[in-house]
Length: 133
Image: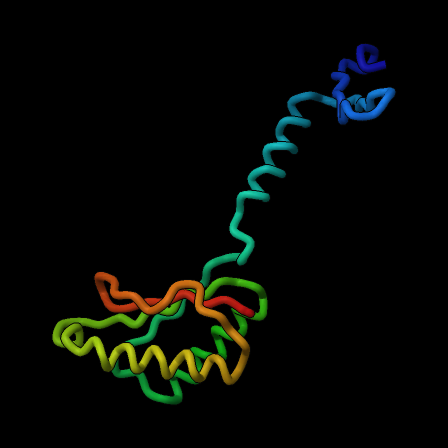
């Protein structure tokens, strides 16, 4: 039957007797299997979204960004929170960490979260990653 249709006979499983086979194009089968393996390799946390905070951000703006992060987290995405510092702001790492902790506290009142990566220093400031619990 496969030769009549100019298709290939593909063995689906070899563990049963008689073996289960499928009639289809082998190239399409390989393509579908490759897509399945790529989907399995993707991170399970969803997409990674980013929220940028500044050094002198106000309380209201922190709350607004926390609501935006809550939208991302409710979709199942990972959220990377960046606090950007420029110039002399970089000397006040302790104040920046307090701002980040305050943001995390506001976010935890809205939605339960867990930190994937703790607060760490980067080239332009500090960042952390959170996900939904």
